[in-house]
Image 1 (cartoon, one colour):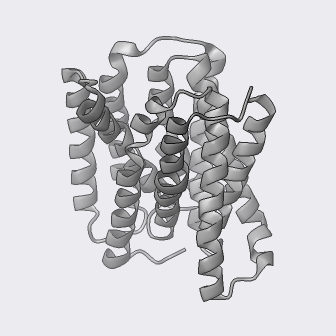
Image 2 (cartoon, one colour):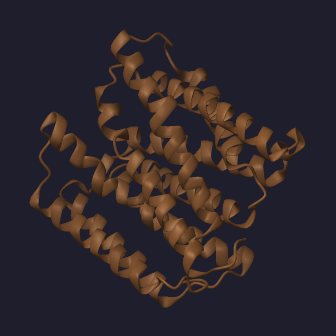
Length: 291
């Protein structure tokens, strides 16, 4: 795990923020795909896996990484946790409300802080806990109009997805020797394998090929590749916090391109989240351990 210092801390924030910015068109591009949900998931996972594999092969040649290093326990754990989190997220979306799912996913930073503390004795400051709570409050404001009790199994699945995502970030944080690109690529292939079992067809229209090509070959591999580098410089709880910006910025793409105008409450919740994160990382600009 990289030692905390102002330079590495700032680098980590920049890397994850850039990854999140690349990820933000995901929602817009997904809405443009007309294919069945599981067909879309299959191609997302497969194309992302292929793109990250190509990148990893180039990177490994430069770094002289042996193939055996790709099959270590941490690497396999990251791949499995990433894949299970993705499938659980989709399952939650189709079994409970979208608002419930997106709100419950915001507990990921709490899971990340807890896992890091329990398994790796990583300190968690009160400032981090306060930031997590305020960000969750912002998510409640954003999705408050659509929140409902929903389906209990779906709600629990969303929480499970958050826990798996947090777990993958914590493992990445404490296994810096892992080739993150290959691990996430493995998760993509596992996602495709799961979707292959339930997808009614793998056929795509020309338009869907374009949108899924952009998603699977550019947006997803670049964004998750960058985000997976974040835990080398930041605690997993901080990475999880930054990733929540996607829920704030993503709807702005829909506003700009398909005229889905966000509500005043959504804008207020987003402003609260962005302000909280800006203040939090400004106060932690010196990269104090566990901040």
